[in-house]
Image (cartoon, rainbow, N blue to C red; front, side, top):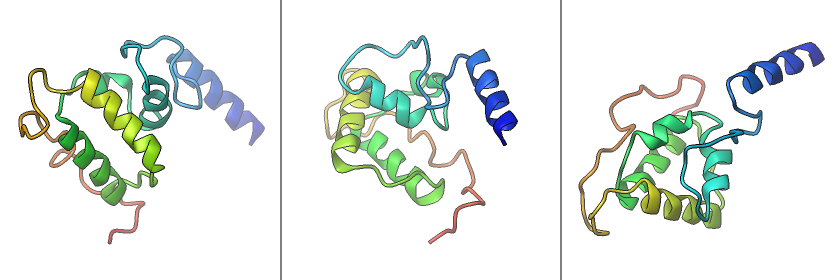
Length: 121
């Protein structure tokens, strides 16, 4: 088991990701919540997935809910969820979109089947 953990750590370091999900160098913009986004989101995704998508706050919120219901994302502390949504809306939002805007794409809505390891409701 120790050898497995050691090898996993070496592999993650080689690709620039720590075991906790934060990268040594990141292209995400500096701002309140960035570290929480890195620690939470990059456990499953590369930061490129975040950088390549822009959604309204409402779509980011729907995406998080979808990940919790279908992909096994744990329930986030309400403060953490708000901080993550604040960051994503500010830095990965849709430029010029107001709160009620429905522009942007729902990132996960149709692209991935439910996680087979998660018991579906």
